[in-house]
Image (tube, rainbow, N blue to C red):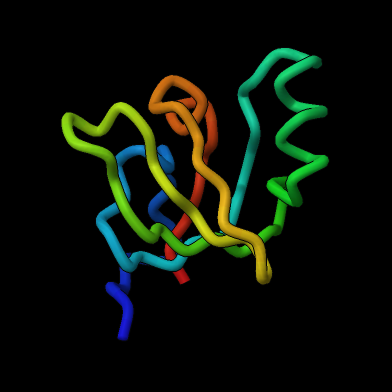
Length: 84
């Protein structure tokens, strides 16, 4: 079961709750970081599931396809998403 959010509401990935499933709308990262995220499958239209937060939200674990990826909080702040 996952949390539903308003489809038109865009927010940052870091603001999503655990178990939330979202679609990437925009990457606000610099070219180098954007290329790294894309290599992990985190790109526009990609579906992400928030799996876990580290204590103090310093990192966030997300699932992209069958891959699990840990992102720094500052990286997750640069990813705009919308709920599904």
